Length: 528
Image 1 (cartoon, rainbow, N blue to C red):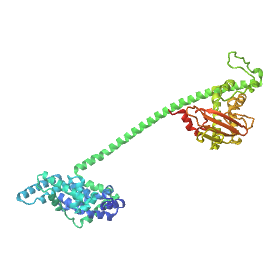
Image 2 (image 1 turned 45 degrees about the vertical axis):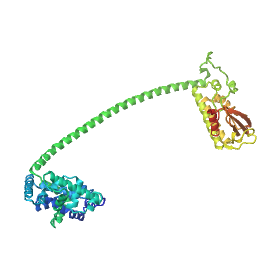
Image 3 (image 1 turned 45 degrees about the horizontal axis):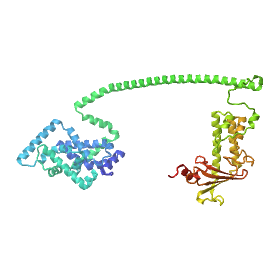
Image 4 (image 1 turned 30 degrees about the horizontal axis):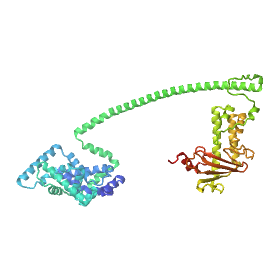
């Protein structure tokens, strides 16, 4: 279908804006076809005019719904046929058909063309077709449109429209042959349709448009209802009265049903509210129980606090300590404890040593918290080193007996006291919070072999993990079969030293892993 067909535009203009000019144009386009269809059905020009007016009145009422139709020919034809049948009583229509059949037989016996007598059955033949086929014949013969116009209305081309019209004519011919009439399939049907073209009286278009416009607008709904009531038969009027009498009963039933539903909903809400209230009461009781327990625990804690306060101020009130001879630990004085220098960490990666844990009698939570503090310090320190570290060419001394591609050298400048001092202070503060002042001092002193405790040159001569000097790190590619990477660490500054070591794949600090990743992979996955 084309989007801007004349019928579609005219109907849309009338439905949207109430354009009388658009509606009159619609009536002028289709009034001849509607009148001719009604005349064939009724056999009376007067009735045909009335039917035509009724059809266009229906078009005015249903314009909004019909605005999407691209062509109104098919709808108007069907409406005209149905409206004509509604105007003719069934008995008169049956008698007329019987008379027509008699005339056809007489004409056949006399050798006269029966086409004129077939006209009353033509509309039934058209109604027996599919909608698209009926529309094609209506447009081509009853409205005398060209094949090109038919194709545009059906959304096809001219040749496809021609074929569809031919097939529809064949079906019309088959309709008559099934009823015992001899008619050529396509040619006879086309001649029969062409003979039905009948011009409407000149004034009918004007009167039909005026009647429809006067009754088709939004304000004419009451008139339309009254007009439909006038057309009702006695049986239909009786049925309407019965319906109207039943309306109060139906409405009462509807109101009662709605009230029952509302009452049920209210009862459900009340039950749900009661359930929620019970749940809230149970929760409140539980909270009250918890509050009572908390108050009891607070009172107990306060009593213990008062007892400790008395013991601190009055040594005589302190309980006498009895030493357990089966204990794995020995009590030592703080002076002796302060002179102990065990290593607080056992590896370069800062793993808390077993010796310090036993000496300080560290619990599992204390050990875990202290290890976390050391790990966080080491991660922050290596992050600072990574920000200043860079790869540099190996020196002649470092390349001695080694090809250049087997040596990788890194310069790691000292990050400076301004950044290291806050890191150390944060670590020491965390350890003090975890272990307390006395044990924290022993633990902190035990870190000195692993890291300088200050930037003083005497703080640590050979730290194992953390350096406060410019550092030169050189890695040498392992030979086939080696299980470790040879590395050289040389410090320049307050802590000046040189240390050579062999690092297994798991011993290389994460800071340096990106620079020797391939060598580590070769050690872990040696070639066959």
